[in-house]
Image (cartoon, rainbow, N blue to C red; front, side, top):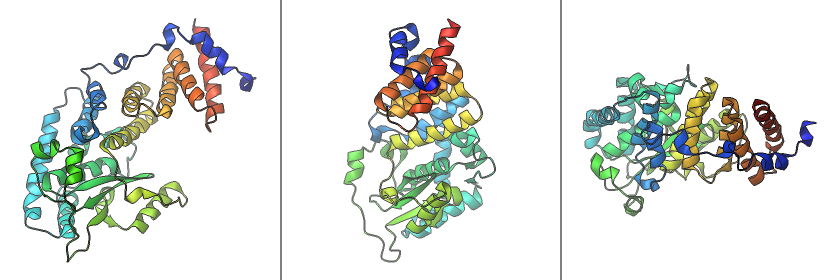
Length: 336
């Protein structure tokens, strides 16, 4: 019976064989866009440029993509809206100006009709087609905010992604200045008190829905709609994601789209980046093992799945994975 399958016995048979060797360079050559993104994974969090990293993801889909062109596009958008922001001190009015510019004048909107399309995860496509996912539209706001002196930070709700405006001083910086600001330097920036007229030192926004301003109660309802039930309130609203966490979430969205399109080869490349970004997350090796299994790379699938089962033997998915492991082992034996 399948449930009687001895996982440890199979491990002894494959350990040290040529099947269990793996190098990220096998999948992510150094000169490939995702290979460059893998190098970004080794940077301190504050040195990760989200827009540049996101365009590396786009370039994997579009070989030869002119990434500098899209960085300049972001600069041009900021320059176009800057006159509306430069003389205004009320954050609510600035947010209203930015929302009007992006949604009414430029036509950016959430892609509700083709939500799972991989192109919604590519920043270049978001700029070209003016539609995207919550996280990629949030990235647009964050990047324009950097250029305009509006401090937006990503908030990862379960099932949805929003941003938070928070007042900081000083205000606008050029690209070369904000790109080189360290995390320590950012932490030392003086937080200003909310304006006397606005009372809004922190403001939650939903870029996927036109930059709508949200209350915490709105966010709880959003999460309830996505999850189908009310979840315990955690520090969703007070803990902005790090740059690395942002990229992980972006790549997970893209991976889900690629798997939905049965493009397991590209999904495997994305998965490799996820492992490099989160080396301690054994679940990522499990996911890589399942992708190897779908690709027919049974030896590597066995190695990753057994790594997961050794480190998380009591996980909820342990028994189904043991059955997958038996399938992988049987197919590898049959092939040889």
